[in-house]
Image (cartoon, rainbow, N blue to C red; front, side):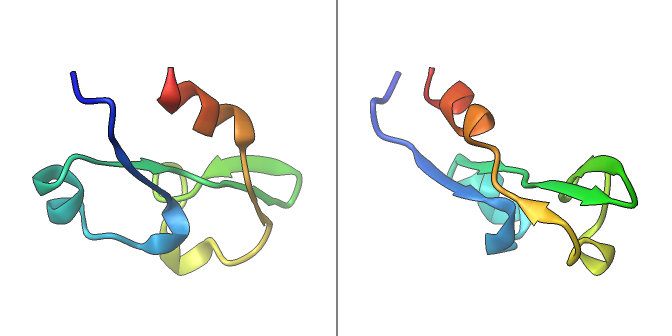
Length: 65
């Protein structure tokens, strides 16, 4: 297993093909909209995810484990 990884958050808007081709780990930002939490690109699309974005340090740490 490599000790080097390419990682970004979902604001990079990297196409899925490139994520797969280069094994890029994408951490979805947490979007809080009208009191509910959504994962950017997972539970909510980029078209409607501009409100309520915030970083999730615990998700970043989980990827490095």
